Amino acid sequence: HGGTVVSATGSQPLDVLVDGETIVAVLQPGATALGADLTGTAEVVIDATGKYVIPGGVDGHTHMQMPFGGTEASDTFETGTRAAAWGGTTTIVDFVVQKPGERVQDTLGAWHQKAAGKCAVDYGFHQIIGEVNDESLKGMSELVSEGVTSFKLFMAYPGVFYSTDGQILRAMQSAGDLGALLMMHAENGIAIDVLVEQAIARGDTAPYFHGTSRPWQLEEEATHRAIMLAQVTGAPLYVVHVSAKQALEQIATARGNGQNVFGESCPQYLYLSLEEQLGAPGFEGAKWVCSTPLRSRAEGHQDELWRYLRTGDVTAVSTDHCPFCMKDQKEMGIGDFSKIPNGIGGVEHRMDLMFQGVKSGQISLERWVEVCCTTPARMFGMYPRKGVISPGADADIVIYDPNGHTSIGLGKTHHMNMDYSAYEGFEIDGHVDTVLSRGRVVIDDGKYLGSAGHGRFVKRELSQNLI
Ligand code: DUC
Ligand code: ZN
Ligand code: ZN
Ligand code: ZN
Image (cartoon, rainbow, N blue to C red):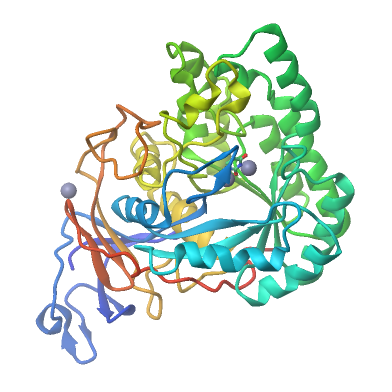
């Protein structure tokens, strides 16, 4: 009551009536619902005066307890979704991993087991296809009927997840037939592996060389190739974790031509840079080793990413939350950057970091809600249940204080299972005050009131964001 409801299309003072797990009415302040004044009839009234009332955040790209590079991402579904709740994210979409040799249909059950009864907020799954073959292609339609309607392939990591162009083409044909979304890690892994090997042989083993051995040209090239393969097959394409401005130029051109191509970026690519990684002492640069890598600020990637966020060519902002501790995990790469597990954790900070983009005049308030909540919900087939404050939607609601303050870092607002923060020292001119997940208050100004197992699996529809 008393807040300003912000949607992707506008902002106005409105009251929101919740019954059980669902939003049942959105009313002019003082108007009557179901024959009575809201504040007079509601069992609980939450005062949102002076605050924004927004849909719960939808983070379309996370990796809880994902096996990677001989270790496992350090957040479990329990710790990771609790951190998400703290940061105003009420739905995540995580990745089921099929490794070569496994039947794709068998892997979903294993991920259901990891997540069931553990999550603080709702969750869905994408499927990583580690090996494209007749059987995995058949498995795709089975998965779609189980609510897993998007599939990630890798042009990077030869010998691990890598798909050849022929395999990509076949998977895209299947996705096109099903109307399912094809997600792509677009980096030329064959060329990158040569550059990595050469760097190590030269003695360039520090974390910084992770970035320099994955140059933007190899992201641009792979992005272009993925777009052309998608065009041949008719598959809708969502390019994940885009960091190079040249890759976004490819995406923007394809979108201008009317192709169903979408670009995702992440706060780390908007805020952090290769130069900062170079300047970090000793092995500290490992904190920011992720793929695609951080890009050079001098080359202007960050500014261009913000610009593409405004034009709409960056369609959604996720975190690619893939946390590893420095101790025993990132440290595996001391003396050889190629052994540093790739990933940055940030599921807790996305809503705040992107709100800072509103405060600094980079994006509008409505665009903030659009890229963090509404579009991810539509992109991944969860709208209008998620991503909008509207009668019939799940009561996933965040009360955000634009005059509050959030200090990011260890010992401050940090609930992720990581022994460092990639955003240590960031100061945000805003604050997540209250978070409701399906009608239940899970965060109440500094207190966690949620529980493991409250979060439920979301069986997703096909993407609702296609032309
Ligand atoms: N790609 C991801 O999407 N996440 C972590 C590592 C990677 O390469
Ligand atoms: Zn990736
Ligand atoms: Zn990822
Ligand atoms: Zn506050």
